Length: 401
Image (cartoon, rainbow, N blue to C red; front, side):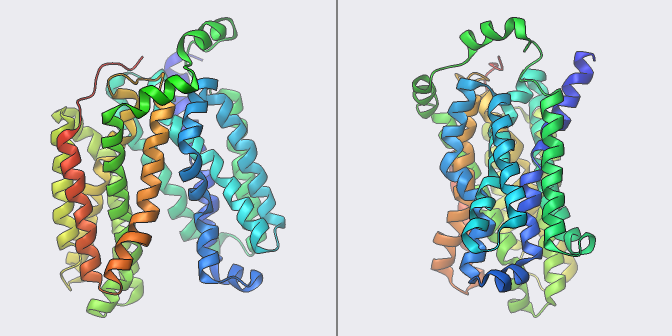
C-alpha cells in the first residue's frame, strides 16, 4: 500500500478507535431507568456510572501522556484497548453497582489514550498545515457515537445485555483493525525502530520538565477548560431552562439543545478552515471567545422557537471552532512537537475534562441554583477568561518533527 493511501487508512482507524468508549458510555443514558431499578441506584450513583470513564481520564491523562511519549503510541493504545474490552465484556455480567462502576471505568481507557495520542500520530503521518482540519475531523468523529447511541439504542436492541454485547464486539473489531494496520509513523519498521526509540522517546523526567514549564500549553489548557465548562453547562441545562422560562414543550427544548452539539460539529470542521486563512492564534482564539460570549448571552433570551434554534446553533459553532486548534497545540507549540506531544496532550485532556465536570457541577450550579438566567450569565464569564488567555497565547512554531 502506498504511503498516501496508508496515512488515510491510519487516520480513519484512529477516528474509529475514538468511538467505542463513547458509544458504550452513552448507551447508559437510554437504560437509566432500568439500571436504577435493577441495581437499586440513587440518581447520584447512576451519575457516577456515567462519568466513571471521564474520572479515569481526569486522573490518568497526564501520566498516560508521559508513558506514551516514553513507550510509543501504538503500544499504550494496544494495552488500553485490552483494558477497555475487559470493561465492556464485564458490563454484560455485572449485576450490582460496584462491579458495573469498575467496568465503566475500564471502558474509558481506550478513549483516553487515543485522545492524548491523536495529534502525535496525525503529525507523524501528515503535513503540518493539514493538522488543524484533521483534528477537526477527529473531534467531529468523537461526537458521533454519543449522538448515535442516544438516538438508536432503544430502537436497535431489545435488552441492555444485547446492547452491551454489541458495544463489546465493536470495541474488539476496531482493536483488530488497529493491530493490523496502524503504526506510529511511516518509517516505523523493525529495522529502524531501535534508532527511533533512542532518538525520539524522552524520559519521564524530561517530559515533566519540558511540558510543565511550557506557558503555552497551560494557556491552551485553560482555554479548552473554559470552552468545555460553558458547553456542558448549556447542553445540560438548556432544556430545563427553556421549559421553565418560556413553557416550551420539553421535547422541543431537547431539539433546541441538540443544536449546540450540531453547531460543535460544524465548528470543528469550519474552525480550522478559517484559522488557515487568519494564521494568528491570538486573533482566532480571542475572536472565537468574543463571538461565543455573545452567543451565550443571547441564545436563551428569546421565546421564539425558530430564533432559539438559530442562536443555539450559532453558539455551538463558535464554541466548537477553537477545539481543533486546542487539540493541535501539543504538536505545534514551540519546544514541544511530536516528541512531547503525548505529555502535552495529557495536560490539555486533564483540564478539558475538569472543565466539563467541575465548572458546571461544582462551581456554576451551586452559585446559580435554579436561576437559569444567572447560570448562563456565569457560563459566559468562562468566555471572558478564554478571551484573556487567548490574548496571551504564543504563536505556533514550525516544529512538527
